[in-house]
Length: 126
Image 1 (tube, rainbow, N blue to C red):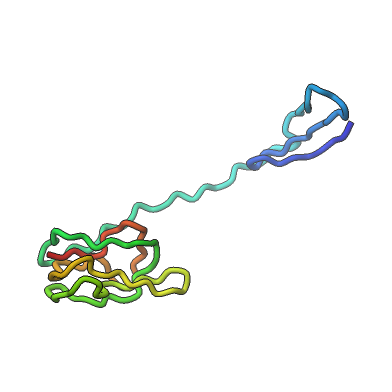
Image 2 (image 1 turned 180 degrees about the vertical axis):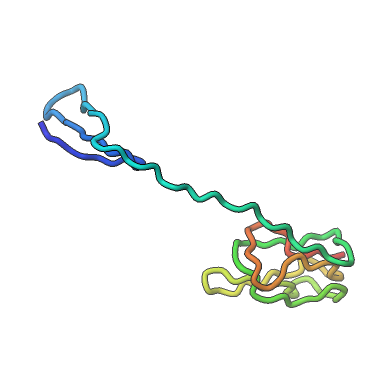
């Protein structure tokens, strides 16, 4: 027989394993009581600031999670497809988020320093 102490999800178990046994291991009661761990509860995400001019019909979304590093375009500015609108920073890299088509920026829904997730709307355009 071999004795092992195993910790699973914060619970400590003394396990006795018989060599050559086909039935497996026997598990004793927890060796010592373990205090429950504190669990962090995520805060509800803050609402994105609203644009004064209203939202456009074309959404410009974040392709990856990151932090808003720079806002390149302004509300009312004409942009061409491929022009940078917002620059994100992720893992020390700058990632430009570009206009998907020609148009006019209708709203900028983020500010420099905001944390964004993939798929979040950064701006809209018409």
